[in-house]
Length: 112
Length: 112
Image (cartoon, rainbow over all chains, first blue to last red; front, side):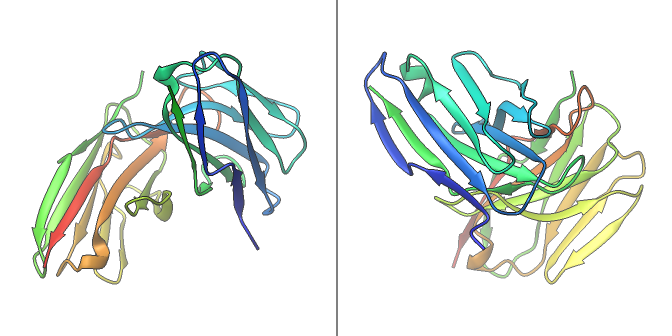
């Protein structure tokens, strides 16, 4: 039982490049989330998907897009990477409203 | 909008000592969750408090939800080096389904 799996674990991009962060969960959870974590700022929600087929903006959605491919998978895309998007990105899932969230190991992304 | 604030931001503790970290919300919360993140790791769910005045214990960790459901605390007794990490509290954002508002965290450093 892997839980929440994120790929890649590390990535270095040049400004303007695009990439997609992948996330998959095997807990049959309805809801999935993407966060970014910067020093001293805790976890900030980028986008979330309450259930398969729906996505909504979180606190800091600018510069990102998401796709809920199916119940298991939720991807995050950076169309034109900027240095301000250097961060650690975490994907999480939960069984529903007010339920505990389970996090992946994170993707450490550096944009030069 | 709702804000979740944690104090202190940093906590240096001598091994064997007790300490408390606090979480305060600008609005009443239906529940509050606590997570722990080890250095280089991902957040891991610890506990959820739902009832006003609720107190829950996990070994040396004691969690409390305030009577007004606007604040919470985590007290660690006889701190050990395994307690090193950042502790986050999180509450429902209140403005939309399922979103959690995380505090900035309390980073705990333990001196042997």
